Image 1 (cartoon, rainbow, N blue to C red):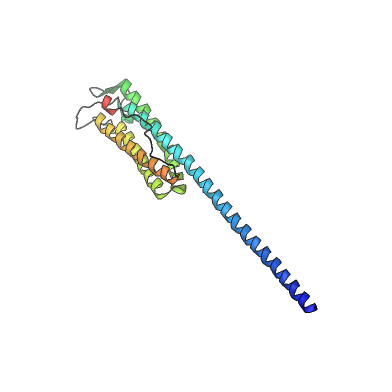
Image 2: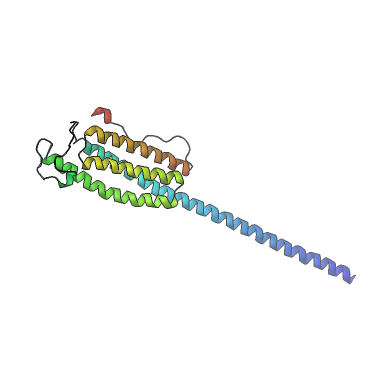
Length: 202
């Protein structure tokens, strides 16, 4: 009888231990899943934050550069600014027969401000390089480079059509970045254009 009681007690203890181990295993698994979900949520929030900053910043800069491009001409001159490669170093009164004081002032202000904003966007693109998908990182880099091309065209006083084409390339790069971001953030549906395209009106 004592052997039977010992056996029953042993089985009971073993069952209790097994139950405790199983409970601990299930609790550990649940905690791991909770941490994974929390990390995923944090990653999505970080991705949304930096992607929004790049998208909004590039859209704003693109629009301002488009507005500044209205100061350019369509003349087909082999040398756009005689004796100068950057409008930032041209005389304050402008260059006779090319652009006047007012045009120069508008373009210089636009270019200098654009340089500062591109520096900020470069930091945002660097953040995306750390938290983004491969597609987000590559499209963010392409967008930043495309915006530099627009500003470079303004700085060197290229013909309007040259800068307008650069703006169109920046828009296409922004569209690509938007698509990559929506895929990474698991947004449903197609992306919608958030800007107008007024080039043909000028």
